[in-house]
Length: 430
Ligand code: CS2
Image 1 (cartoon, rainbow, N blue to C red):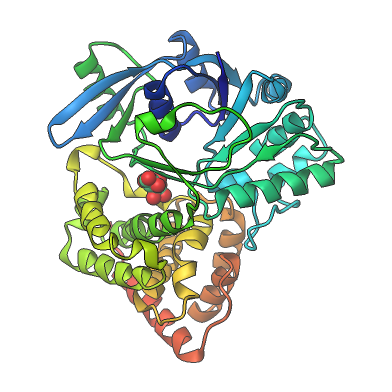
Image 2: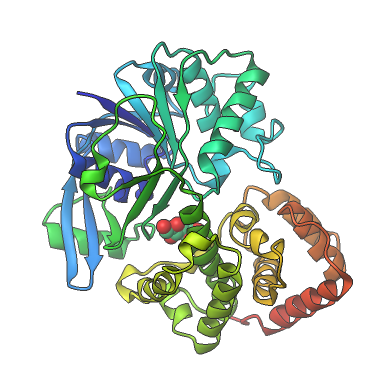
């Protein structure tokens, strides 16, 4: 049976690519858990199977997914992962390792000094990039590598990162390796005890690896494969010549609004996405953000964008998803580069995108004031800036540098400072 290898067996993969592959049939998956030993143990105990709860307008539907017939834990057995990547039975490698898993700098290229990448240049690889580069260097047959993370031009950036790592590590990549771009979409909250209990009650089975997801799902892949692939189109996947318009639309509408709602919503005292989108002021701000984002989108997605926006409001409003703003708020310094920065560097003025940036800046200050650690790969750098007692503008300028935003005109500075100060002043006291 032909085989896919997947790196990063988190909730999103189990709700999305695994679901499509199970429906397409005929392929099995080697699932690589990167570091979560408890998840690995749970999946091993269940023979790789788990329950997916799909929340639609007509209630919760349970599907048992059983496509992972081989499981590996990267942190415990990196060499086994390298060997599995080189396995000629594997024709496709997919990965969901989140934005930070790519070790990219603000310029979108591999940062050889980022801790995980620097470490992998001197030891057994542990990062997705290091594992892939070593495994791909051992391959004797063509392979397709598909990044399924929310990174624009994800295929191109992954190709560049692997090539840069291989060069620095003295590895030779000699087979045909394709890196198609993809757009992936399905809202999938982290599994809480309440979500797990709900799925267990509906399925009648105990399942520590249960996942809840929404009914909506989209996967668009650039048609650039080095060899065979599952008949994913039979399961609803679109294989197209150019993914970029869909990718930027999703990042600048869905993900940009998510990040804005996360920071502004948490500062306003909300916990969930459905609560934040029900707030009249936040909802109006999201519509304005979308107007600004829409102005930056390619012509061929303009006509369908109003319907896309209306569908997003409905998706965000589903209370049963219990999608926590705090989950979306993490790793902001990387997410904003993809979601908000392109709106601020576009041709027209984007005051609401500027307020989204201000919301993130106010959020990092608010977390510090509450004595809470920021979940962000740049947390140490941000903490050092916050400890330096900078005035609001100097803090904004340093944080803008961190997310790759070039300097802006003076009137822009004043507006950003006033947005940040207002939000800090208004932060919840609880
Ligand atoms: C979210 C995404 O956590 C986040 O940052 O914006 O995970 C979002 O739910 C997915 O991209 C939806 O497809």
